[in-house]
Amino acid sequence: MHMKKHSILENIHIDKLIFGGKGLAVAPDGRKIIVAWGAVPGSIVNLRILKARTNYFEAQIVDTVKKSPLEQDLPAHFQVYGGCKWLPISYPEQLRIKEEQVREAFHYVEKYWDGSKWAKTSEIMEMESSHEWIPQTEAPSIVLRKPPVFHPIVPSPEIYGYRNKVEFSFGKYISERENIRDEFRFGFHAQGQFDRIIDCDFCVLADDEINAIFREMNTYSRASWLPTYDPKINVGFWRHFVVRKAHFTGEIMLILSVNHEFEGYSRKHEGDILVFAGKLMEQFPHIASIYLLYNSWRADIVTGEAILLKGKPTITENLLGKSFEINPKSFFQTNSLGAEKLYTVVRDLMKTNGGILLDLYAGTGTIGILLADRFEHVYSVELSPEASKDGIKNALKNEVTNITFINEKTEKFLPKFLSENSDIKNTSLIIDPPRDGMHPDALPDILKFNAKEIIYVSCNPATLARDLDYILANSDYRLTDITPVDMFPHTHHIETVVRLEKNA
Ligand SMILES: C[S@@+](CC[C@H](N)C(=O)[O-])C[C@H]1O[C@@H](n2cnc3c(N)ncnc32)[C@H](O)[C@@H]1O
Image (cartoon, rainbow, N blue to C red; front, side, top):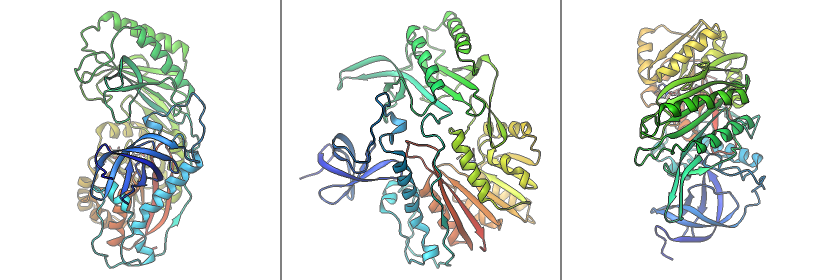
């Protein structure tokens, strides 16, 4: 059988899920198949080939021939949208898969404790992350160290309704092939499609109050007769609806993003929205803040000028005894209970008391603020000016005075800081970069601190293993602990916290 783009592969067994949430299977000719999304290990499916490469295929599921024994029966009102693809898989099985993926990524650095000559990379991770994965061509001269402790994955305390922020989108669903022409949709983007929206009436990752507010918005916006925004022609009004709910204080913020330049939008509509906002606040007393976000940009992102319609400018969330202010544009971990688990792992792994703490890729400074009482001084280094500004406010709010916020790229900050503080001793490091991991320029500088301890928090095991390979190859650090943390049940996302110790 000649297998090319659009060919159908029948009765294919999904063997496993790999990092990024994709499925893995084997084609009749022995080539690997990466299945775009919705694959459940153990199921038998028919696939359509999307791309045929020399050594593997990319494919999507056409239909399921036989359900996997791992698949659970869901309540009728649970629906799988793009954000919760793993919903059909039982939670214990999700945890097992995530833990396995982290273990697999660490095969890459096992050579530092088991002495294997070549890095045991997972071929799939190489395929998957080829742009970010740099396999070794030669084994470096390896100094063997004691193996790390691989701790069991820390589950999320809540597996449904755990998100403190949900972003709903307005739009359309127009498809000649499917014979659908629906001009008003409100829910989530169809998988991988910027211009098609799937209606939703209940998001399992959001709590009941968020869902109830969403339903009110749905009824109101449909009755308004104002059209949804169409990014293809830059016309229409309704764009996004973001609901943030601080788990521990219960305070809610609503952000309604609209194209204020839509020609059918008038002062009357503005007045109507204000009245609706007032009614919502009466109906849901936890709503503390309602914003209108004026956004006429074409790009499908929640951005623009935020105008406070009702209530106060910020809401407050508490984490581990500290309180944090959230404004419409603040970054904040989206699972508050899960964030407490993550930060507790970081706090427990960090053994040092005293000296300087560098909190690199600090966001709003949360980790630095939580650990500040253990150190003489904390430097919180973050690229985004808004996040650094929020960090300053949060430090003041919590009366943390031994912290300095530096709004700069880590790779630019490190050489400057090292040259200005050549006598610096007793430094500890927290590193919490985005998916791509650390900038290659930052890695050599990290080692110049001779820090007793480094805690690396990562949302991508592949780039974590890559950066650890550099650190272990070029220093005598030992990896002492690896702890995966699940903050995002029903999605493929996974956090990993590791601890490195000098001369351990
Ligand atoms: C995973 S978040 C870490 C958030 C924070 N540690 C927390 O727990 O809330 C990564 C952060 O790194 C920032 N960032 C991205 N590239 C950076 C760089 N080159 N230097 C410094 N910060 C960067 C992003 O703006 C983001 O806030």
